[in-house]
Length: 301
Ligand code: PMP
View 1 (cartoon, rainbow, N blue to C red):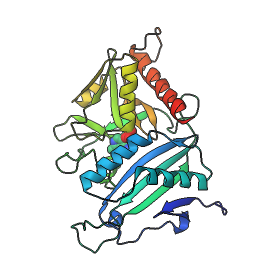
View 2: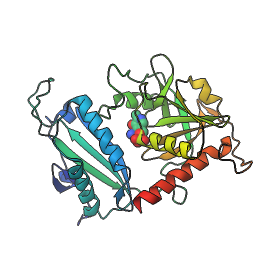
View 3: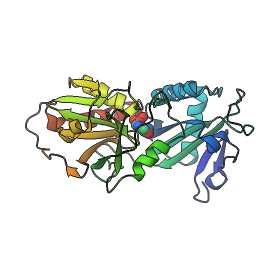
View 4: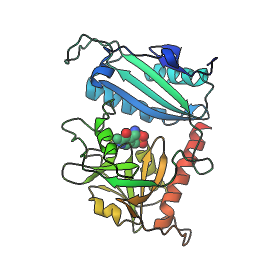
């Protein structure tokens, strides 16, 4: 903006950050009654827009939040926010709340949604750039359990992030919390999906459990498929990760982030490349990171 202040998109208008406000009786504020997506733009193009738009629609379906806005309308608001701030490489947050409604919990089916697009500069990471993370993650298993799907479906990406916040608050020196489901199987990180590699096989918790179907997760599984890396989606105890050849996390912001330690124990550091076989445990993280980066390159530039 002219005064150096960023512009955000609120209810169809670009407004300076200091005036980008939501009413106190908005259900997004009162109850976390809102759907959202975190996205990245590379070179001015919103990466994997269709996948994010589809997940947003699934979230709105789960909440029975009928907002009446088209994918094209939402994308044009993102594009306008990027242009107004002269941003090409950016972090984007798109929220749709159930809007301002009389003070009762039961939602009114007539919705005037509050739509917010928040953007911020985020340089491209990948193998050529600088990743947004400071280094390998220190993953810590916490006592806070992932909310079961029959309470709040994990596939719905809503403003209710207390589960992850409580998990992060439990950390003692680590920087990502590992949440288990109620039976003790690994679900996901507070804001990330989890993968591990053992004997050339890539493992990740199934989204049948309380696991957000990450867009990055999906893409990494597609890359693994293309590279001929065998994949298994299942239910795993934290011990499997602790004894794995390598562990990594995924989300839109981090892309692929290696895990350096788990529960305070440094994971076996055997990052030596033995040969060019992409199914070598040492190579799998690197192969998948490169393939992810190639997709960013192909689809955004
Ligand atoms: N799980 C949770 C709980 C998350 O908040 C996120 C970040 N959106 C992820 C997983 C990763 O999802 P994505 O790859 O779509 O960013």
